[in-house]
Amino acid sequence: MSQQNEVAGIAERAADDKTLFGFWAYLMTDCMVFASLFATYSVLHNNTAGGPSGQDLFSMPYVMVETMLLLTSSFTVGLAILAARNHNRNTVIFWFALTFLLGTAFLTLELTEFSRLVVEGNSWRRSGFLSGYFTLVGTHGLHILIGLIWMLTTVPRLLTDGFSRVNLRRLTMLSLFWHFLDIVWIFIFTIVYLMGNIV
Amino acid sequence: MSQSTHQSGSLVSYTVGFVLSVAITLAAYVATVNKIFTGWSLVILLVFLAVTQLLVQLICFLHIGREAKPRWNLMAFLFMALMFGVIAIGSLWIMHNMNYRMVPKGVEVNNYLSNQDGL
Image 1 (tube, rainbow over the protein chains, first blue to last red):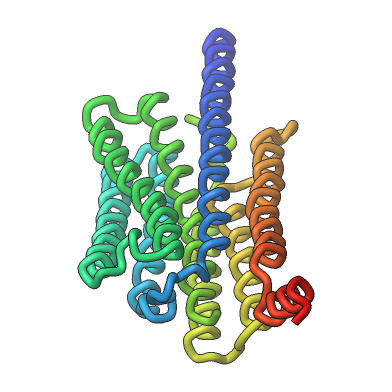
Image 2 (tube, rainbow over the protein chains, first blue to last red):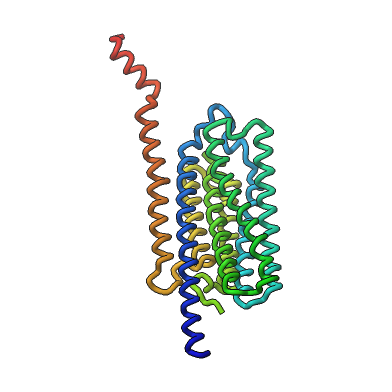
């Protein structure tokens, strides 16, 4: 590699690092959004206003399936990034397609649960507990939806532009976003569903 | 080829992270549903398992701390964790205190009324 290319390579890498750090900073501020929603939920979770509590409403096996779907999708997005590093286009598309399917299945289950609650008269208007629940879990679901749309808009670019620097950067940010959503879900699973089952 | 900080994962680290996460999730689920633990001991166990899984995923999936020095990503994360604690624990603390002071128990109300009215 000539010296000129080497310098250009270092400059590009520095630009990558800067973009990824910027995205990381965004993720940290997004955590603050979830911090306030978790705080709100925790404060309100006993205020059922005579309505049902978490124990009455949530089916644990159902939530466990949701959790496993999201956890597996966090793994497959990691495999997609590994394949992207090796510029293995078909493998990347395969893993992202699987991630997309798992994410869609997760979101479908979540929206099914939401609509069941609303139909049974337990919407966000029922009690402080349910307001907190729908806001927290719904915000996470909205992030999942955004992640799915992001996959649809980013992954097809591999077919047109291949593994350009910009594309690799986009895919890396997308994978960070998806891992981050899985981590948020661990705490929703623990605090809302598992602990809701005992207290 | 890109060698930036977030791409330092390997097949081994992702697989280890996935297997550990599944195991921890199953443990938390079984402990809760089969009522192996109850009450506060279960709460403590669940918090412990959630934090363990957080660390597993941070290390195996997000490769935190494996960047070159200075570790700005790690520092931003630690500051976020501190603020998260302040917001979440602080809210619970304040609201618990407020409930304690603002919503008196039946006995306290009776005492207050009897003092006021001299009954």
